[in-house]
Amino acid sequence: MFKKISKTVLLKLLKWVETEPRGSAVKRGGENAWEKEIFIPSPVVAALSVAAFFVILLLEVGFVWVKVAGLVLFITMVFAFFVVYLKYDIPELLADGEAMMLLGLLLTSSVLTMQVMKGWPLAVPIAAFVVLTGLLLSKRLAIISAIVLSLVLGILNDFGLEYFFVHIAGSFTGVTFLSGIRNRADLTRLGLKIAAANVGAILIIHMFGLWSLHVLKINLIFGALSGFGSALIVLGLLPYLENFFSRTTNIKLLELADFTQPLLKRLTLEAPGTYHHSLIMASIAEQAAEAIGANSLLARVGAYYHDIGKLSHPEYFIENQQASGNPHDPLAPTMSSLVVISHIKDGVALAKQHKLDKVIIDCIEQHHGTSLIHYFYHRALEQNEEIKQEIFRYPGPKPRTPVAAILMLADSAEAASRTIEDPTPGRIRDMVEKIVNNKFTDGQFTECDITLHDLGSIAESLIASLSNLYHARIEYQESVKGDGQS
Image (cartoon, rainbow, N blue to C red):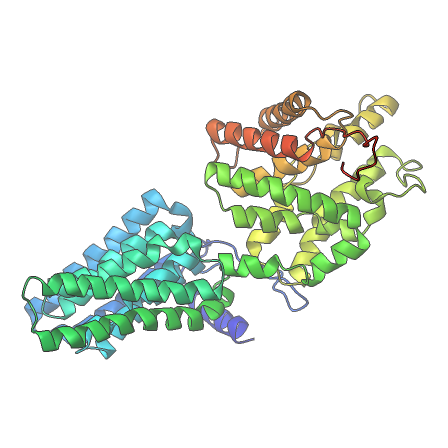
């Protein structure tokens, strides 16, 4: 409720700023969901962040006009650097209004913390804001934030290079181990690593004779406190920032992967065939994602949920059909295609109802793209040669991320592999290569940042995974002597 009220008020205040939305769409789910897309303009976020930075730092430098001019130039340089970097390296974040608001909040909060903790510069938990940036936004952006924030801390403390060096060491340590964070315990261990890096950097500086032994002991305590404090701050703020700014971390993905989640539990009971298909698909999609350096955890969780729309009519999908017959037999091909296609819309509706994250909804929407349902289309051609192909295509959108592309290929490959009578490695290779080529020539990857080399790596991974899954087993003869071995 607080989130909805806050954003509604903010949007009303900023409505006059621009008539054309420039932020990224944020869709909500559930009974009280927003049915419209919400846009938060990035320029306003940047302006508010600059103003907050200026006010906080102005209190430190004083109201001497030369220092004020220097402060204005410094802030301009820092934010211009951020904008240029984002434009050329992570343009999708620059277009995301919520991401820019989160970045501005983290940067401003870190500088405000520096000001509040003035006098204890080595105890400032800069690494906390760097780690939050890496978890919620981008690992590369976290590195840039670490450099900028450590530099600002040094400037605020009489241009002390030693403070810059210590916090760079701790922050870079946090960024280095970001990819290994899968649960809350990992964050606690990360705090220990940051504390160790801070202590190591302080000891190195002491070797240059900068501090007395007494000051060294105090600084070591402050450095350790900075690491532990960073972990506590991340643990405390991460769930709220995830929810308020609609970000999805690996920790959240692992929570969604729990099969006690309502939708996954329903899948096991109401559509067991789809559940089994999703499990196999998740395994091969995860391996394919690792092969090209994509988010393997997102690929696995996306595969778990990609077909939840089949819960609406599970009996119309072949993996759930029993010996009682195929309900598509009495239907016209056009009607059958509508039923099959509807599982995308139904899946999105269920995902929104259960308030699943947008990245999961994207996987549901995009895993078929605008692909053609060949079976029903060819059945329809037998009845009417002039029937339009568009009727038998999924509505899209096409895959827009490498993970969505992987799910598309893994879904088709897993389903097709079950139709091979003798799934030898050679036949599996031919099948996978045909699927990849067909999807590529059909233009399914035109909106996705994926290369031909990536597609080749994905194909090889799928071939290896499916070959291992359906590998031939040696038939052992029963022992003539009945020794019980087999």
